[in-house]
Length: 193
Image 1: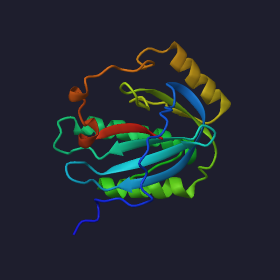
Image 2 (image 1 turned 135 degrees about the horizontal axis):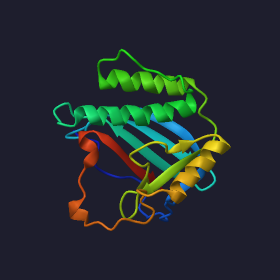
Image 3 (image 1 turned 90 degrees about the vertical axis):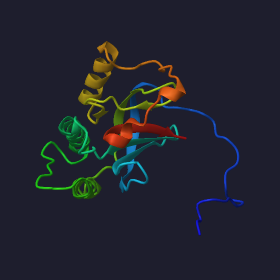
Image 4 (image 1 turned 180 degrees about the horizontal axis):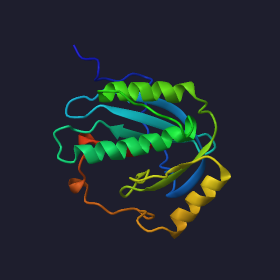
C-alpha cells in the first residue's frame, strides 16, 4: 500500500511569492546541504548541492547527474562533471582537493560528499547564476561559478559583465520542447522558494 498520496492539515495549499534569484553574481550564499540522490524510474543518480541565501530567503539546488555509460559523449560528460565538482571542492577543501581510484559513480560522490562535509562550509560565497529558461537560473555549464575571496568575486563579476555566452535575460521556450537533459548525465539547477 502506497503512502505517497494524500494530504492532512499540515499540507500547504496556498501558493508562495515567486521571488527568484537574479541572473549575475550574487553574494551571500551558504552551502546548506550536499547529498547523494538515488535515481528513480528513468532518472539517473545524482549529487545535489543546496545553497541558501539567509538574507533573501532563497534556496538554490544544483545537481550533477550520473552520466550514462551508453551515451556516445560519456567521456566528455564525465570530464565536464569532474571539472565542475573540482571547482566546487576547491572553494571548500582547497586547491589540493583530490579523489582518485574510484570505480563507480556512487563511490565517487559518497567520497566527495564526505570530503566536503569534513570541511568548513559555513561561510558565505558568491554564485554566478544565468538563466536556463523563462524562470529558472543556474550555474553556467563551465567554470568558474563560485567565488570566495574579494579578488575572485571581482574577477567573476568582471567576467560576467564583459563576457558573452551568459544568459542574462529569461529564455523564452516552448514548454513542450524542454527536455530532461539531466537524466543522461550533466547538471541541472533550480531555485526553490
